[in-house]
Image 1 (cartoon, rainbow, N blue to C red):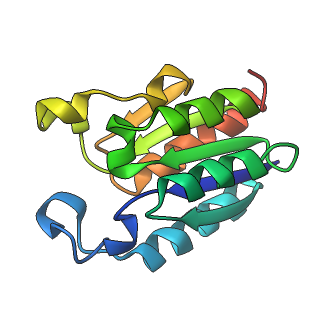
Image 2 (cartoon, rainbow, N blue to C red):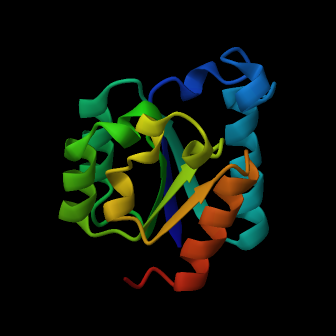
Length: 145
């Protein structure tokens, strides 16, 4: 099984951006821990990050036929991007939405998620562990949607 982990806008600033909310671990640590978890559960994983909505859409489109599941943390694009939602719907790859913080307990506008209209699971407020839960869920689902 091959998984694609997509991180969106500002995730490259982990460890610098609001550490009280997002923690002190940086993006490289996140990627390292995701790869370690993938090895532990016996899946292959690729991690990508972009601050550009169109690049994220292209990543999703290029995943078609190459990946069995997508874990996505679109960052702020969660609340604004119909384009990312449409790309996920187009490729029909099983997807889990992840957020480091509990977005539902934050500002009102963060409670809106276009991605959750497609994702079969939404994991919030679990920090890096949310990515591992998402990967486990896709593996358990057996890439069937």
